[in-house]
Length: 149
Image (cartoon, rainbow, N blue to C red; front, side, top):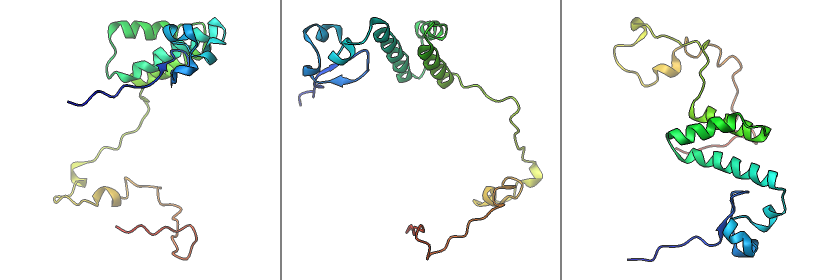
């Protein structure tokens, strides 16, 4: 059985990067804060840690109760960057749909008896207005790319 390949260096919890051991001070190894981030103020460090905690939620497909509570707490945070990031993560997990979105309903009479694979591409009602300004492809044009299939 082969040995497991280990990742080199340490993970900085403020900037979210894996860096070499030389990028950490003696105390930085145990605190998981690199030299560059240790020069930041404690408020900036905590903001970076909180934003990384939010981005780490994206690894999951579903949020647990504790993660939902953490996300709601960050939505009400006093720091603007943390609130915006939490809002983006919430929108990613719970997308909001437009109520005024118009759906095209296909009538049974419009469905062909035999399935034509090009039907949806050439149905004029589905593509109304798409080809108002057609683009001419000219082989002599310098931007023309011929893709062999």
